[in-house]
Amino acid sequence: MNMDQLKRQAAARALEEVRDGMQLGLGTGSTAKHFVELLGERVQAGLKVIGVPTSEATRLDAERCGVPLTTLDEIDHLDLTVDGADEIDPDFNLIKGGGGALLREKIVAAASDRMIVIADDSKWVPTLGRFPLPVEVIPFGLGATRRAIEKAFAECGVSGQMAVRKAKGGDKDGHVFVTDGGHWIVDAQLGRIVDPPGLAKALSAIPGVVEHGLFIGLASSAVLAGGEGIRVIERRKPKGD
Ligand SMILES: O=C[C@H](O)[C@H](O)[C@H](O)COP(=O)(O)O
Image 1: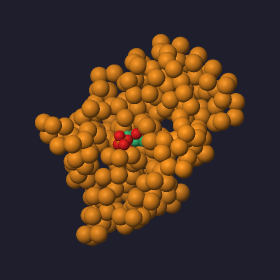
Image 2: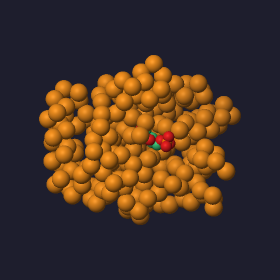
Image 3: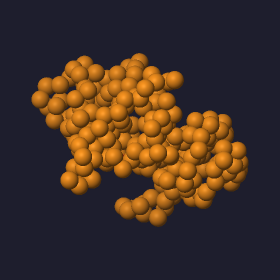
Image 4: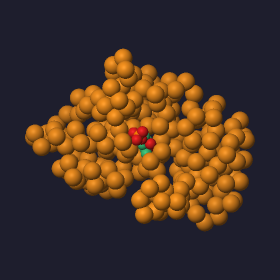
């Protein structure tokens, strides 16, 4: 089975948690796209749900698949968010934002009673950090923001190269990548993040940082698809603890 088939399997397993009448957060990325497509099939077959997309790309996918959409201004909470991740550690800390959607993804996950992470099992890692940590920044004053990020890294016992993300492919190829919110992303190669909650707190305190890709205490469970089958792992502590 190839990687894409594994991602689809994980998405299909998460779909089993969806009930009629649910208000859903719809994640972004290649794995979440499978979920949106499979959800669309269920909607065509009569399932009644409404979704909040975490990116313009997901909004377009959901519209194409016939999934009814709303916003967090129109509804007051979400029952369940299903989203991918770039890394998941055994404490259910995540790195997200490889596709640049971290800001809306975090807003949606935080508004949701539960978050199921769907992934192929290569994303399950003992320690976060091999995947570059995305930090969404305001372009104004970027030099100062980068220095503050470096200081936060040093205080949290990590260091590594930082680079402003460039768009890959399409007509924006090679230009600075711009998020749905109009911000830039700095990717930091940290290797090993010893204290994800501490680093998350330090980054959130920097004025030029809009958001970062560390998701702490948001994921409730993980559906991991691998060669041996599917594993569903529940986080022991309730969401938010
Ligand atoms: O910004 C993108 C998201 O955080 C994605 O959910 C994450 O990058 C995983 O994407 P994929 O399922 O394509 O590996």
